[in-house]
Length: 217
Image (cartoon, rainbow, N blue to C red; front, side, top):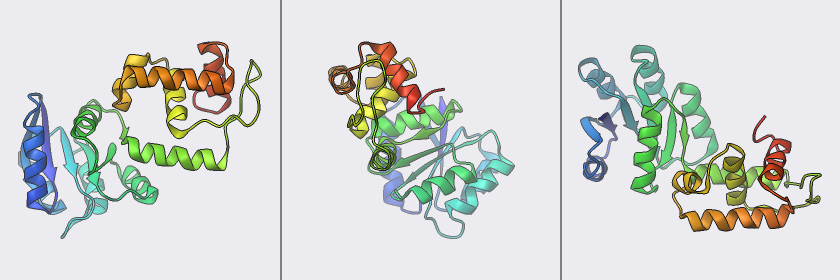
């Protein structure tokens, strides 16, 4: 059972998230707060695994609260749930000690996956922000093919780049589909498109391509 402290200054939003999370038997909301001061007070008396919190809160906001949580309750993981999608806010929250960052318009399946990921001690960045960062990376440095088949100027989409990275990490099509919240058939299509665009002969050639782009070492 993952114990969650839900923090947002909008009561109706907390009610909605609590209702959605209640459908999952492995997740339990053990407390609610409307600001950072209340979060810290609850953590003094209540065992919590994950604080699911907004950034913009009165009294004590997320930027000030997260470092205090990390200092006083190092075993507690922080997952940010916010509408702030600019990369500077993402960077600031991770630098402050947050373990994950997800947008409020994410599907509940992605939010629950993020909670479990963070609770296990692993970082999480929601798909929408990840794709936005990939799009910027692609715009700044178009991907090129490998020596083993392929050619310069290959144009992979942001989603294809994300699939390529996960292929390079050794994930199967099923595992990639679960991670990206899409169907196995869609991942198979992406894989075939990547192979066609790069003219890579096999998965080994795709991994070589990923290495050449710095996705894995």
